[in-house]
Image 1 (tube, rainbow, N blue to C red):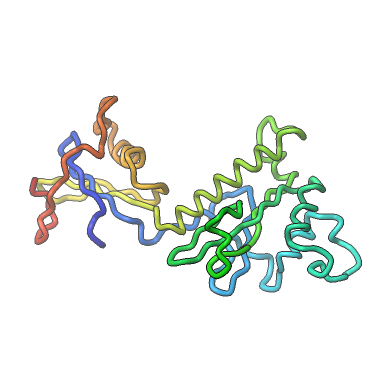
Image 2: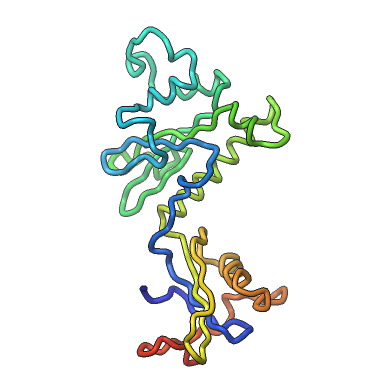
Length: 235
């Protein structure tokens, strides 16, 4: 195990060590309501495609009646932007484009903002969609008027979780007794930026006794010094 990213002395006296999760699970393996597909020579699709030959056009055609017809090449009759608009106009699904920026790290976005217009390192990666019938099955209180708004929030949340996974922003903790070095507890798969809120989640997951009073911050707790030879906290 690599060195911890952070070591803190908890109010109980235990030592909280926070590590990067080196074997995180992709959020696309969770029970998602959206479907996220990508086509790229270097990277696999976030969600498994129905088969290896499934194209972007095949996925869109499943949700756009206008695209299911005479066998004429969809790519010759429509641009991707037009096909996505047809899907959204038809009302069978909310379809969002997935843009990728690949320069040292991979970034995905539903919007083609400035960083995603670099002709060398960015471009359209795939699509992220939520079928109308799935929205009505999954969401409480959804109506014809608001299902798209609800679906957009869900898709944005799913993409945020997946981006955290791509960025390596997945963490775990180990709590040890500083006197004996005994491991008291550990837990992994905390997704998020390593900030005060995430540290609080970890500390309170371990023991409510280590819940700090309002106004105090875990980030301000004293760092625990770890002995390189025995691995125990020395201060």
